[in-house]
Length: 263
Image (cartoon, rainbow, N blue to C red; front, side, top):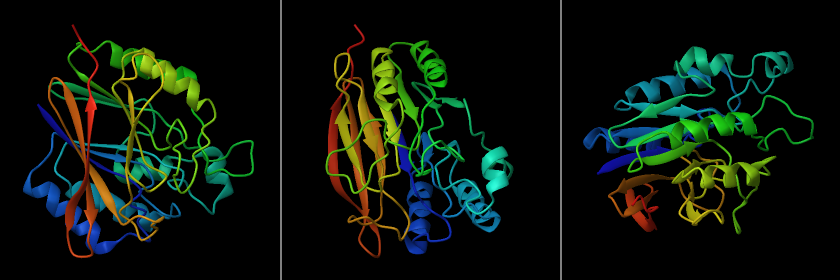
């Protein structure tokens, strides 16, 4: 019924150039219903990195949906981090940083911002989620037809993944994940940890899943560059991990997720 290609953590500035170009070719060969990019399109938030990222995004087949990540702030400008954290992102990419959504013929994606320019703890790379913004997203997704695939996109995983090479430590993440699950959201799609995964959220009927994506950068954390391909029908969402071999992408792992009942 549908097909989404998810990229994340491309980190222009330290991108894997061959993998980035091969990812474009993959999408061009069979354009998906949506190209979804879940944050960290740059490494240090420099204008030149955003401009390179914007050119790559524009080369992807439309439609495209992009969320911001913690690396998408002006890393070395405290003033901009404090007062204009997403200005360069929005100016160069043309994508909003907050409360955006895309509706396809049988699915909807809604974005929530989990990255911050600064926060009241030492490690500003960790995640924070606003429950009011989450509630708005949940209501928008819940209002779609019951047969729709409902997707929440953000950068940080809302629940910690056992065995992941790093943590998101999202403030209010568990609360947000449970709120979304109870609203009938099917997938919470994220990046940040640079490894792919798909696990159920332990709330509701456990048919809300956290789906994580790998990286297209040279900043690998024990796993090669990769991206996800999602396909679905009335009963199942299938997540196929496309892994970089050094010369091409090949499917390396397939995860089947049971969809929530709509009857």
